[in-house]
Image (cartoon, rainbow, N blue to C red):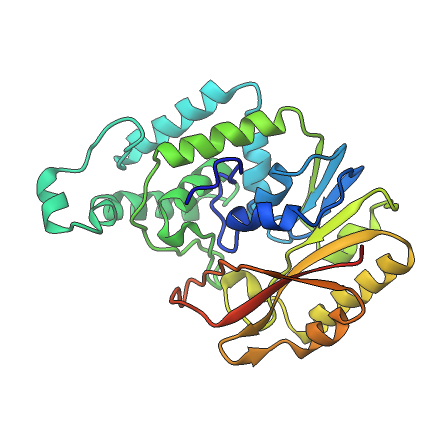
Amino acid sequence: MKNLNVNRSPLFYVGDKYKLVSEIKAYFPSTIRQFVEPFVGGGSVYLNVEAENYLLNDINEYVIGIHRMLLSYLGKEKKFFADVENLINLYGLSFSYKEDRVPQALKSQFVKTYFAKYNKEAYAKMRADYNKGNCSDSLLLYLLLIYGFNRMIRFNSKGDFNLPVGNVDFNQNTVNALNSYFRLNSHKRTHWTALDFEDFFKSLNLNEQDLVYLDPPYLITFSEYNKLWNPDTERRLLRLLNTFNTQGIRFAISNVTHYKGKVNDIFIEWSKQYNSHSIKSNYISFHDNTIKQFNEVLVTNF
């Protein structure tokens, strides 16, 4: 069932909280001065929260680059869609939002994967052009995300974007998400950074009227954005939240406590001093998107 009253990020980010926003928001306070996200990702949570200001951060500079690129088109949305269409036409990609370009013969032969078959060569050319450049073209990177497998952002050890083509394209859902993103951000006061979470918090002046929402990489699951996370970073984050608690700063943190036989004992033991709420999870991994055995929680200090 679709979340008719929830706005989805146009990044369609893996691990995105789109399906869980309503459930998570139910635990948030009714008034928020500054809404703070150190692991903002695609941004589906902040898009659905009302606050006076939004302090948004992610260590992934490419993700922040896409957000900044999209926001640069505020008030110039027609130009954004024109620029996107020009790139799509330049590479000869499918464009189901406007027209059906995939031959019926290809649809009949590859019933479930015809977008991937049709776009494979065009996508490879677009990816090669992006990698030949200085990797600063966030609009081209956004299209690689939209047409890529599981709509992820992934780079190899050489710094090249290396995600294969996906069985998706620029469609009506993408346009809907983009229009919502532009509409919502037109009246939100957002501030963006790409820092380590501790460096991010050092620059902030928070008080008891603010809310820090955290959706960090999950220690016991595997995904591209979990590679930089380990028990030490987990403990660093939890110590910081204890400090916030002594300062009267409200926080809510999402995490997975059990996953495929693994248990996050560090988080479970820490969470006993706060309020823990069970959350229905939608975790997806690039390496394994089968049904998982897991338990996701939201822990709050209020």
